[in-house]
Length: 290
Image (cartoon, rainbow, N blue to C red; front, side, top):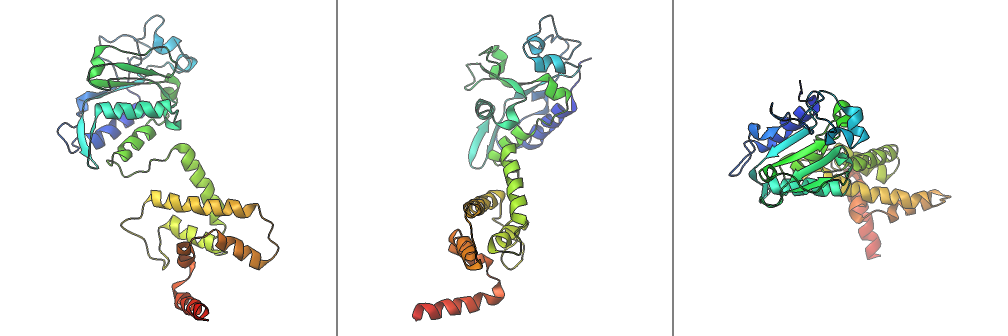
């Protein structure tokens, strides 16, 4: 019989963990988040291979669905909610619009989603369809939003939570980052490139402290330290490295000049060990007076 796959159960759990009992007049209840259709439900992504119908659109319209058909359902319904976070109210409608916008932008973590059937206003029903075959749905979608996933992604057990983690993070209900998979890959490349510089020049030393969450004394940074701040600083450092990579330096003085040209006064100050900071300040003062 049609079953709920582990990856959609994990997604359901993620949403309920953060939207059930969330602050606000109407949290998301467990009975409002469904995967497998009721016994009368035949055809569509809520059904597995035992309950699809002849020429079922959830099978025949995409080779991804034909190749991925199993007993697993490949859909998730999310019911109504109204929660407050970050000084704003977030609802099923705003959640749906956010997800659709991510799909329209073809964000990497949306590419297993076939369609979203939703209501932007509690009255009109719309459908975003990756295959461009439909544009609306029945009236039940006024009070729930439907997500269909390509069946091959469900069959492969691919994690479907990243998009929804980004949503929860964007509204302040999840301590997570909002970077796309491509941005994560970029950050990994930056880390690889900059780690080798540790101990050899100020850029490497600054980067290592950033990556480890330490200040210039080596103490852990607490409070306002966050990934966005780190990413902003890494972007500046990567820009400096890129500019330097195209230059042919022939002596140490030129290398130092090139490195310092790409650093802000704050970066330079952060790279100076506390033990010699006073000596540097005294020397700069002497030169300015002279």
